[in-house]
Image (cartoon, rainbow, N blue to C red; front, side):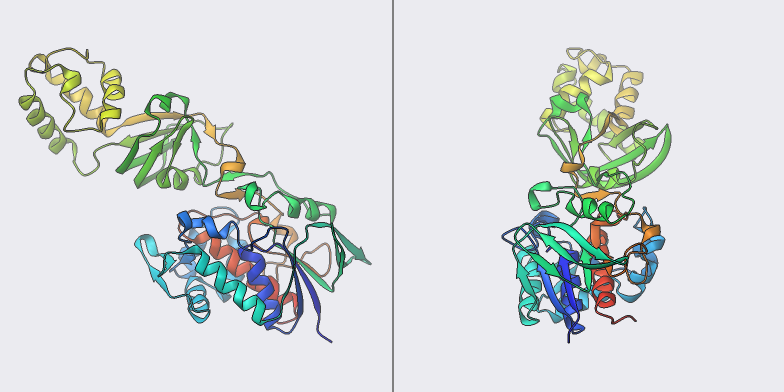
Length: 409
């Protein structure tokens, strides 16, 4: 008789776990309260779905700053290239873009979730629209799941409910509650890949800057540098550059963070100075506040003029070299003091979760309750942006599904 397995959570990790368990011969029931599977998966990568990263094992681990070593076994058996092959076999052609980010050729996240759903149906995985309310155990082993609508006996249960980011997608912390009830430790939950609070930026709300440099300082020590796009908002800063940087800012409350934006990264200081001289010659008879139109977006000019210390109506032909040098430094080091991260609900991924020392890294099985397995964002691991967090979901989901069904490698 087939081993009965219940997977709780129909996101990326849960679908992968259900597929791998069913492929290994188990009778699988997938519990998911949402009308659609992969609800969060469908909004990743701005709806394009950054499936994974076309990277080797060493690179994958280097991009998991929190408990990366725990994933060594799962990544060794299923790395980014294995994930690419898996989706190609499911009928989803993939492509590799800048930073080795992997997307479906169609640029449609729904093609990824749709392929997973078709595979689940072919494998006769039973999908039940129910929310898990509790686990049942006997003699230190799991015996089933109690849902809001029914009970589901099982010889193994895989928890894959996600974290607490984007709660509208169903990531409401159910899995952490169930894990804690089973005796597991859940570490502090906070956001990673999250917008940043910087109230001083409010006047710049709506301004998007492309191709700028960013340096993050932690207690005045350079922590991280990157290049790309950011967005000023009513609360502070967001956009790809900021979300990536936030994953490195892990000690809010204990350490102070500031950002320095290089508004003209393509120009070194000498070249930028020549550009300023050229612009100031062109606008020699204008007020200073009207001499930056060729250099900066209109919305940024007021802030730069104010921070430069140069009177806005001073004539350009009266500017001293020291004033021009101060402006140059400002353009290369536009500083933003960061107050903290936005709430975890606004984060792309959750940092924190079920303590990794309580999970077998090879099988994803609980060391506390026999037959209980974990997969995905629920575990206390998180990565930088670039497809690495979904790779965690695929690799841990696969490891849990196969081990729960008794097919270990």
